[in-house]
Image (tube, rainbow, N blue to C red; front, side, top):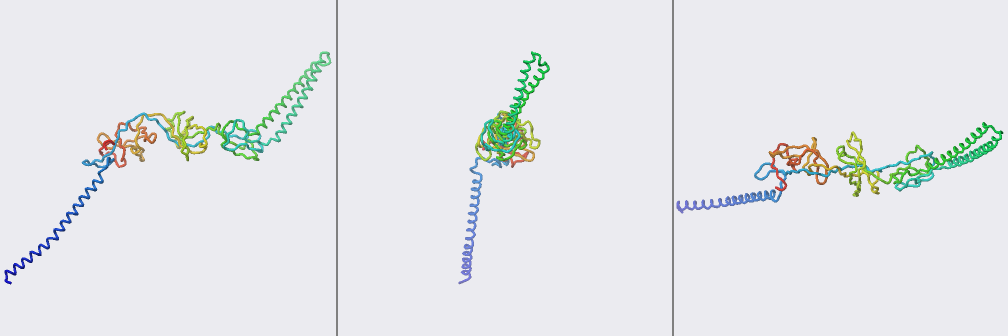
Length: 395
């Protein structure tokens, strides 16, 4: 091999080695481009999934606009039937305590139990009257004695009147005998009055119901010694009528009229009863700023005095605005809503809340109904912030 032949062989060897080095580099570049393409496609798909398919974005930046988008509505105003929700205690509308009227003594028998219905004048308990009966017998005997004296005095007077015409008896004697007769007749009347008094006292030894109604409590047993200072032995709900003593706020109490109706739901049951307000408390509690609305109820076994119940009372109609609960916010300064002014800036508006129902919250004061009120996402806004308002129809 000469020099030229060796040079050509070396050049040929170098050319083959360069080709082998360029092949791996080209493969790496292709893999890199594939990875980048996959990342871009994945980002596009993720963006579509996050933004696509949503009909409404209540709050956030919109495409081509950096201002947050909020949903607003002009609620307007109308005549609303007011209602007041309250709680209270069930009680007898007319509760009658029944105790000992007469002298008292040992209870012989008790004829009723709590929960029984009684009529007016019915005997509830009987007190021993053996001593009093003997006293009545003595009084009856005194009437017979006094009547005998009166008869004798009348006979003496009659005989004297026959002798006075003959001159044997003076007029003075006639007057004396007449007075004796009159005194004897008076003693008869006194004895009869004393007997009637004794019998009346004996009748009071029976504890009777002063009116028809439902016995709520019984606090006496046979053998017990009772007297005028023993307190109430029975408690009766006259006619079985019940009522709810509803505790109502000072403002709401003025909105409720006597005669207004309501729906009462006792705690622990889903039963509902219709009531009617028959009296409003003339006094407001200084601590709670509440008064009592007394709601009359007809008797029902589910209405137990002392139980707790809620009531929805119908109040006066009012012209006001109603908003969903999501639009009303509150803090230590009170209740408020956010409105969007003519410059599309958020402004805080203090409001006074009225009744709350399933339809929403009545705004008693603070809005005219012509404002653009932020319905949702108010907690993410700050006063003075510029927004892009949209309505529900705009999505």
